[in-house]
Image (cartoon, helix red, strand yellow):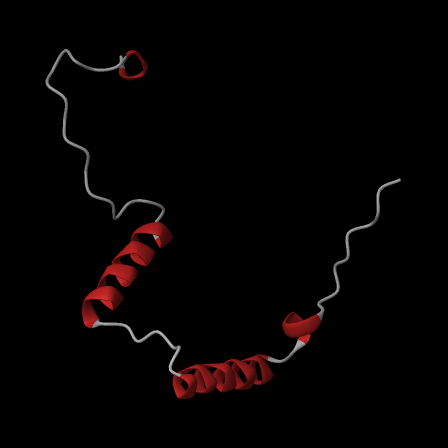
Length: 78
C-alpha cells in the first residue's frame, strides 16, 4: 500500500547548524582555491537582493501595473 512518510532528519539536516556551517565553509574555500567560485559584482548582488526582497514581501515590492483608462476594466473588476 502507501509507504509512511519519514519525518526524521537525515544527512546534512540532522547536523547541528555549526557543523553545517563548517562543512559549507570548507566547500566555499575549496571552490575559491580551485578558481570555480562565483564572485558577485556589486550590481549582481544589488539585483539579487532586490529580487529576494520582492519575493519575501509576497509581491508588495513589485512595480505597480499601469492603470487602465476608465471604462476599460476587465469583467472581473466590474
